[in-house]
Structures are given as C-alpha cells and as structure tokens.
Image (cartoon, rainbow, N blue to C red):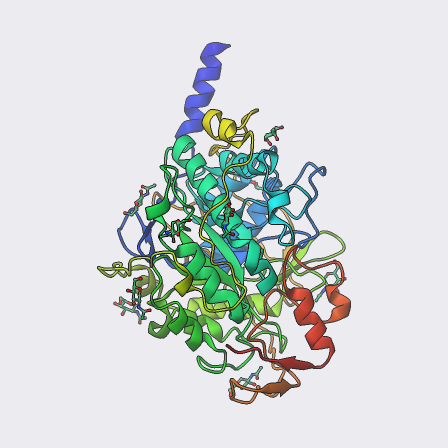
Length: 507
Ligand SMILES: *[C@@H]1O[C@H](CO)[C@@H](O)[C@H](O)[C@H]1NC(C)=O
Ligand SMILES: *[C@@H]1O[C@H](CO)[C@@H](O)[C@H](O)[C@H]1NC(C)=O
Ligand SMILES: *[C@@H]1O[C@H](CO)[C@@H](O)[C@H](O)[C@H]1NC(C)=O
Ligand SMILES: *[C@@H]1O[C@H](CO)[C@@H](O)[C@H](O)[C@H]1NC(C)=O
Ligand SMILES: *[C@@H]1O[C@H](CO)[C@@H](O)[C@H](O)[C@H]1NC(C)=O
Ligand SMILES: *[C@@H]1O[C@H](CO)[C@@H](O)[C@H](O)[C@H]1NC(C)=O
Ligand SMILES: *[C@@H]1O[C@H](CO)[C@@H](O)[C@H](O)[C@H]1NC(C)=O
Ligand SMILES: *[C@@H]1O[C@H](CO)[C@@H](O)[C@H](O)[C@H]1NC(C)=O
Ligand SMILES: *[C@@H]1O[C@H](CO)[C@@H](O)[C@H](O)[C@H]1NC(C)=O
C-alpha cells in the first residue's frame, strides 16, 4: 500500500501544472518577480450567483466547483484576462482544484477576506463592535486557505467599508488594524509575502482622505508589530460611461489625485453599464501612457450576468452558459492592447515615499485624524502566535484533463466545441491569443446609440448618465433591491438615479 501511495504521489507531483510567477509590490507598482517587470491587472470579478450567491452553509463557494472553474477559466483565457477578484469564500472548503485550474490558466486571484454575513466583516456603523477575535480568526482562516496557491496575488482587508463621512470618522483606524493583523499573521505563517490592501468606494469627497489615511507612514508611533499601512489601494469606480473621455469621466482627477502614491493603485471594479450594451472604451484609456504611470490596471465588474445586469456571460435555465455581446466587445478591447509593452516595463526607479501620518493629510471635515490604531482584541494575539485551529489549508493538485465538459454557446446560440483550458508553462501569465477556441465566432452587431453625455464635469446633469460620486453596480431601484454588495454605497446612487437626476458632488 505504502509503495503505491508513494508512487501515486510521485506521479501526481510530476503532472502538477507549472505555476504562475510570484507577484510582488515595489513602491507604487506590482512586479512580476520572474522578470522584474511591472504587472498590470487585467481582471474580471468572479461571483457566481451574484453578491447574494454566497452562503456559509451551502458547502460551496465560487472556487469549489471544478467543472465550472474549468469552463470559466477557459472562457477567461479566451477573454484575455490575467486575474479574477473573488469576494466571498468559505475557508473551511477545499479550493485546490479551482485554484490549480486558474493557476494553470495563468490567472491570478485577488481575494476578499470578508463575507457579507454578521461576524464576517467590519461594520461601518459600529466598527468597534465588529472587531473581535473570531472575526479576525475568519480573516486569518482565509489567508491559511489560500496562501499556498502561487496564484493568490493579494487580499482585500475591506471593501467599501468607508463610504461616507460618517464612516470616515470612525472606521479608518479599524481598517489599519485589520490590515496590520493580516500582515502580522502572514509574516508569521506564510512562506512568502502577500500584499494586503483596501477596496474603496469611489466617493470623491473622502476617497483621497481614505487613501492618505491608509498609506501614510506612522512608524514613529509603531510598536514592533507595525501600523497597518496598506500594501496597495484600489477603488470601485463607475465614472466612465459609454463614449466618455479622460476628462469627462474624471479619470484625470484620479490620476492627478493619486499621482504621488507610494503604493500601487488600481480599479478593483469598473464597467459602467449605461448605456447598454457596453462599449468598454475605458479599457484602452486605463492601460494608456496617460494612466499607466499611476494605475496598475483594473478589474471589470463582472463575469456572470445577475439581476443587476453587469455580466459578460449568462447561465441559462438549462444550466448551459452563453457568451453575451459584452464578452466579445471586451475581448476585442483586450486584444487591441499591446501586452508585450504593458507587462514589459521596468518599474521606474523611484517611487514616492509615503507621507508621515498627520492631520494635515486629511481635507474633509469630520474624517478621522486620529492615527492611533486600536489594539488587538482579547484572544487575537494567541491566534496570531499559534495559528488558526483547526487549520484550513490549500495546495496545488494535478488536473488530469483540461477539457471543458459543460455546454457553452456563443452569442448566436451555437455550441462551442473543443473548449479547454490551455495549461501554461512556468512563469507564464495569460493574455489574449493564448486560448483561441472561439476566435472565429462572428460578433453580432451591437449598435445601440444613446446620446453621449455632454462634456462637462460640473454642475447638475440630468438624464442618461453621470457618476462622479458613484460606486458599486446599479441599474434601477427595482433591480437593486436585495442585490447590493454589503456595505456599498450603491443604494444611495440608485436612489439618485431613481430621482432621475444625478447630482455631482465634486470636491
Ligand atoms: C517579489 O519581489 C518583491 C519586490 O522585489 C519582494 O519584496 C517580494 O518579497 C518578492 N516576493 C516573493 C514572493 O518572492
Ligand atoms: C477559526 O477558524 C477556523 C477555520 O475556519 C474554525 O474552524 C474555528 O472554529 C475558528 N475559531 C474561532 C475561535 O473562531
Ligand atoms: C504619535 O502619537 C502621538 C500621541 O498619540 C501624536 O501626538 C503624534 O502626532 C503621533 N505621531 C505620528 C507621526 O502619528
Ligand atoms: C460611440 O461613438 C462612436 C463613434 O462616434 C459611435 O459610432 C457609437 O455609436 C457611440 N456609442 C455609444 C454607445 O454612444
Ligand atoms: C439570463 O438567463 C436567465 C435564465 O437563467 C434569463 O432569465 C435572463 O433573461 C437572461 N438574461 C439575459 C440578459 O439574457
Ligand atoms: C508592442 O510593444 C512592443 C514593445 O514596446 C513593440 O516592440 C511592438 O512593436 C508593439 N506591437 C505592436 C503591434 O504595436
Ligand atoms: C508627494 O509626497 C511626498 C512625501 O510625502 C511629499 O513630500 C510631496 O510634497 C508630495 N507631492 C505632492 C505633489 O503631493
Ligand atoms: C485615538 O484612537 C485611540 C485608539 O482607538 C484611542 O485610544 C484614543 O482615545 C483616540 N484619541 C482621541 C483624541 O480620540
Ligand atoms: C478528457 O476529457 C474529454 C471529455 O470528457 C475526453 O473526450 C478526453 O478523451 C479526455 N482526455 C484524456 C487524455 O483523458
């Protein structure tokens, strides 16, 4: 028995897929540690069943269904992405097959450590009441479950927890505390460093204060355990809609606002859906010279069609999946990018150093200026020292067959034949052209003409679009009900849309 067990293990090891390169953070850039060049995120949010699709008791999450992951990894290879964002995972489930499939496909995972259930995230209204040992244990358990997959790129310590000035008054120290605790846990229990950052709502009145608060250097007051300075800062932004432009979308203000960042900046969600279908004209802009010196790419919201209408693919009632027009449009945008140029840039010599923490960094009245980070709650130090118990774990496993068996149809209703994941070689990352299974599909004309918004950044805009303060997916109030991400500002935006008028709160 033991001999065969050993033989089996050797064979299994021999057929393990190669791994993606390690990603690191160097100043304001992500770097591919195999080449030393920059890494720019070309990502898609991966959330089967939508934001309400997660249940702690269902026995599954976005990364537990091997057949679905094979299907989706193959489609994402065709799409041209190199990263997914996964919001809600259960640390007690086994993610080995899905993580191994995405790894083989050359796709990194950006993972949220929280879930939208009580006790699984910091509550913006009463952060002090939700910062306790079993909450931290949950976040550490996610780290344990994913840290050993080479394609785990980073963890989000929070998503849209600071979404208005009220939350800005009390939550920021807790975001630094959770960041600090995750960093300490990783330093003690992980064989490699994994960056920890924050995903902000694009609420301009507090966006830059939040960034300054989280990136500033407080080493003067540091204990040996650090101060919870983030390793990166990301934002969920829907301010580019339809035929917009660098200035009209106010991307120019983001670039100038973050130009001095000491940490990488990226869109942790983007992809406004007004008008539909989307034209994704922000894609060439995000990776252009105008932006890529400050931004490290972004993550399109989102892979699956849900009731809020942001999907690229839809699951039909019979369980088959079909590619929507937006899938082809986005695929075309990615295919037009020059990945060699994008991913082949050396990180420029000097990155700005972080500013020293202090109230002068904060510009909005009422936003927190106390840079003392809360002490660990009772019981948490033991978990950091001894590790989560029982210990979740994850490791790459051999995938014996990369053929997709699930039924996938193109946007004309024809089944895609011979769909499979292309298993990449060591240190390769996915990009357009690697998996061309459905390259010959004819793209249906998707011409829907809606008047582009007038070119103004000021005042009150009526009608089809605009959203400088917006964040989070929205479409209409009816659609919003029950489908908002926890803790997001989407409801406010939906209410504004319902009123038929978007008021721009420019700072
Ligand atoms: C990757 O490179 C960065 C920057 O040089 C370094 O800080 C980090 O430790 C490296 N990460 C790994 C896992 O090798
Ligand atoms: C810590 O997390 C592990 C893994 O999810 C779980 O089994 C355990 O019950 C948790 N412990 C506490 C004290 O919350
Ligand atoms: C350090 O803490 C003291 C007292 O809390 C505060 O006055 C000072 O501004 C802090 N220094 C920094 C760099 O945050
Ligand atoms: C965007 O602009 C192009 C070129 O002017 C036009 O053909 C297209 O209809 C516009 N699309 C939308 C959604 O406004
Ligand atoms: C997506 O599929 C569902 C059935 O699962 C269907 O009700 C819905 O209309 C489809 N949405 C779109 C936009 O095709
Ligand atoms: C892509 O960029 C590389 C490196 O800058 C350059 O050599 C190549 O010509 C570019 N390809 C295209 C199609 O522009
Ligand atoms: C950039 O940050 C550095 C370090 O905090 C600071 O000295 C400098 O004034 C900042 N520059 C701008 C344009 O904000
Ligand atoms: C600043 O925050 C710390 C830690 O939460 C707290 O102990 C202290 O009382 C606060 N200081 C002020 C002036 O509010
Ligand atoms: C992989 O699976 C497909 C579909 O089930 C099958 O047709 C094919 O023969 C398998 N390949 C190998 C090498 O087992």
